[in-house]
Image (spheres, rainbow over the protein chains, first blue to last red):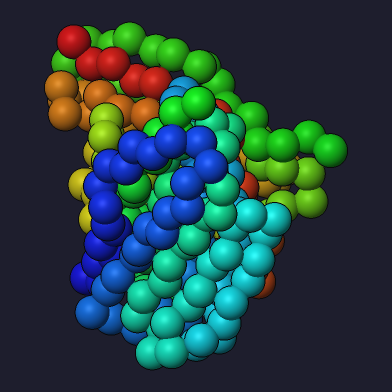
Length: 111
Length: 113
């Protein structure tokens, strides 16, 4: 079973700070997705990364897929309270049999 | 553009009972996946339906079953409920050829007492 680990588990920062969260695996994934989930709601898809080394930007969010396609990072510049939420990475295993989610990083941005 | 909808929003059941949860996919989507999310954890994949057939399945017992209808909507059935089945049940829809990009509904919060 391919597993995804995320770090840190919890992160509390002040508005305006920068931060990076990580998603790691010992296995290769054909693609990875990042989602944000707010309390009482379902996850919302932010981005899909497919190519090793790929970098995608979504306003203040920058996503990177590792060269070996085993890890990914999410960098947020000048965090705002609206960025608060649970950030989840997810991927499909090599056999196309199972979708795997990491445990998430819970981000709190204080005004 | 209608997103993914789920019903009911909340549900309370007793151990041993059976429950049916419902999901309507995002307009234009043909594939539906179901997930269980325990408090403080990431979603766990239960199964995926496409063309009214179970296409993929995670590590869940046979007490968990599902169905997809011709209009692509889906049901999740759980028999012989256990206390450990208490969780948020999420439905996600996608296109069959891009099933890794999933759009989630708000979930059904199931409490088993």
